[in-house]
Figure 1 (cartoon, rainbow, N blue to C red):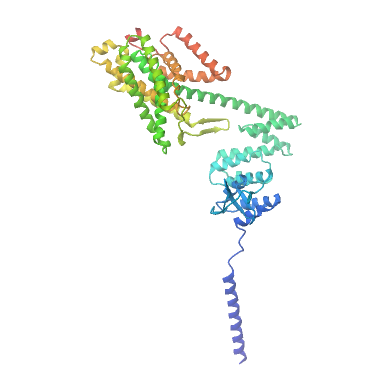
Figure 2 (figure 1 turned 60 degrees about the horizontal axis):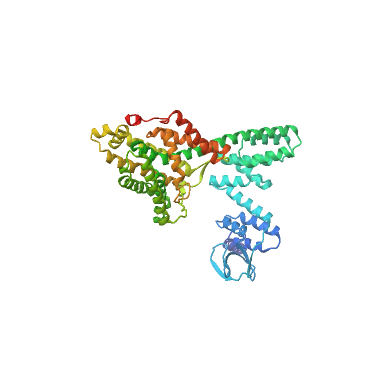
Amino acid sequence: MGHAIGRFLTTLLLAALCNTVLADLATDTGPAPGPGLHDILNQLASRSFDDKEAAIRQLAEQDHPRVVPLLNALMNRDLVQHRDSGAILLGRKNSDGWLLLDPVSEAEQQQVGSRDARPVVINNRLRTVINNQLALRDLASPDSEQRYQAAGQLIGNADPEMLSALTARRAKETVARVQDRIDVALNIATLDNDDLAARLNAIDALADSLHPAAKNALRDRVAASDNPAEVRAAEKALARIEARIERYQTADTLFFGLSLGSVLLLAAIGLAITFGVMGVINMAHGELIMIGAYTTYVIQQLLPNSHEWSLLIAIPAAFMVSALVGILIERFVIRFLYGRPLETLLATFGVSLILQQAVRVIFSPLNRTVVTPEWMSGALEINPVFSLTYNRLYIIFFALAVFLALLTLLKKTRLGLQVRAVSQNRTTARAMGIRSERVNAITFGLGSGIAGIAGVALAQLTNVGPNLGQSYIIDSFMVVVFGGVGNLWGTLTAAFSLGIANKLLEPMAGAVLAKIIVLIFIILFIQRKPRGLFPQRGRAAEE
């Protein structure tokens, strides 16, 4: 009997224990949840800047997609405190006061008057904390570009927390340019170290950096240090940096010279054909460039939502429009004036004035802006002191592509053979059955179309206006005469030579004086070699 009672009591105790365990399991939902974004944001209502800093740091630690927008909203004074409830909300300023939104969901809550809410007040210390926290988040980003930018923001930051984060990131960073940027930040911070050997090592490392902050930090170290060895090391590092900067500045000048040369090549290559084949001094060539630029503008207006592709459409459109205008000029004006260069010059000058005035009437005298496509915007950064803008890079390659296409046309096609025959000896070409009048019209249209393509390129570098072509007509004639009339290789060589020479002279003499010097050089050169660098062959060249 006693054993039965004992077993019964034991069973009751085990059942009670199981029920207790099951009840605990049912009520246990894990560790208590941390504060939500709303709770953290409401801490910003405190008047204490220390409390606000703690809230900012706590907010930055949250793994939530709204953290970065909320930190930026706080920086931009878009987080406001509702006077009645004391809650921190997103505020959109409008004519009626504030439109309040939920800071997490961005759902509209209510419209209040301008006095019913006020922006959360922060000081410069808190702004620094916010920037640091944003940089720390970007420093851990999987995107190398964000890490690169974040490391740049932390250059010159002596906050131990930031330096510790940079050191930790450097240990696992695999992208070379991000590593270099982090090294610059850490070495600049090391310049304030008490250890002389560490400072000397940092100075030696900064000597290989072209970042402006590295140069400024070394200058400050020269002024602040009283150690002769450290001063000498810093001065030597500065000399190395200055020498490298000078080399890259020269490279930058050469790049701009190539860019100018490519523009001159596009502007002059069409003139080289018409001037070389037909002997026509076409003073309306600049206006044909202008027509190509305005065609680009019109195409963009017709395709307002397709800026990325409108430029590609504008290239053949500008060629056809300018070519058509060129053929009309040749058919109705120039063909009556062959062999009379002075009358041709005056007639084409009059045509240029007519075209300018027509554009003023149609589009107004105001300059028009052509939107650069996204794929042509920005620059290829080689280092902090040298970058290649994409629009100029594309124009250089585009100019070379047009040159090669035209060269292939003249060397490999029947039309090219006829053009070369007429340019070398018009009388013999006619005797061989070549219709020189037809060749003249097609050649003038071809040269005019290429001028239109030049206008497409120029529209990416400058505003489009009625006087656009006037800026390049003289330079185009200089290129053609210097390179050799009718010789494409001479035009290519002359365009890039004059472009680079202009840009090399500009830092020393200024833009205007540089052009004058180049013009004087060409005048003296023509006195010695009247036919240019690459004179044309054939009997026509002797006439």
